Amino acid sequence: MALRKRKTTTIDLHRAALRYLHHLAQVTVPTAHPLVGATLAGIRREVDDPLPHQKTALTCDKLTEVVDTISGSDLASLRDRAILLLGFAGAFRRSELAALMVKDVNIDEDAMHIRLSRSKGDPKRRGTLIGIPRGVTRNCPVRAYEKWLKAADLNTGAVFRRVWSPPKNKMASSPTLRRPKIGPSPLSDRAIADIIQKWCGVTGLEADFSGHSLRRGAISTGAKDGYDLLELKRFSRHKSL
Image (tube, rainbow, N blue to C red; front, side):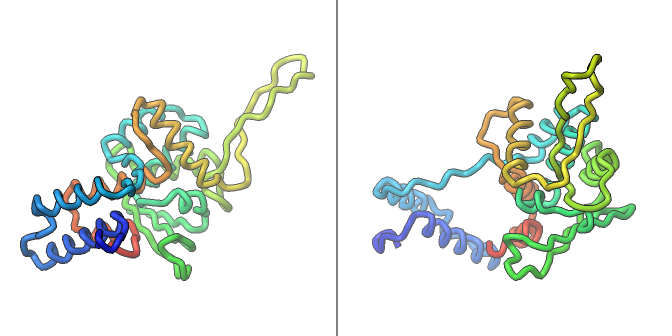
């Protein structure tokens, strides 16, 4: 493949496919041999085709640090906690979080059920149903979602919206009480990424975090905990391995 000038990312994809097929067959994985690694390293040195930049995974331990930093009970803090915990628990893309509507979520005593009407992994828009069980720790995503919805008094429309404080009334004889307000429109996917980056920075985590870090972190955590690749594929709703 290298002699045919195929990209190193394409070669890596084929190597991963071979690794997985041998894993399914429960036989020795030949691509793990040191000669294969050395050959690929040599190919990389010969071509001007650097590895694609990967965003840092916000794994479970790092996520706990970040969420514990968001200790406030104001609207923005409640919203951001819900975004982080829900995004991780469902391995959501930032665009999926931004597009989430109240009508898409049903909650019972055991779990929350989320129907994604549109997603990158569902180009035919058949809809995808995602179940997230209630947790037993302080960082339960279902509880965080319920707290945000109750505080924001949301019954319809977008789940995650902009929260801001209106400007002070300079003409008033005394300072007026500034009540946070909630916008009618959903946050953009860029805003979701900004929230993740903001709180990672406040926590003191030094790495390249982005809107993809929650999804990547959930998958990485599952792999570290020993989940099978097919289980992870179903969990993350990837179209291919």
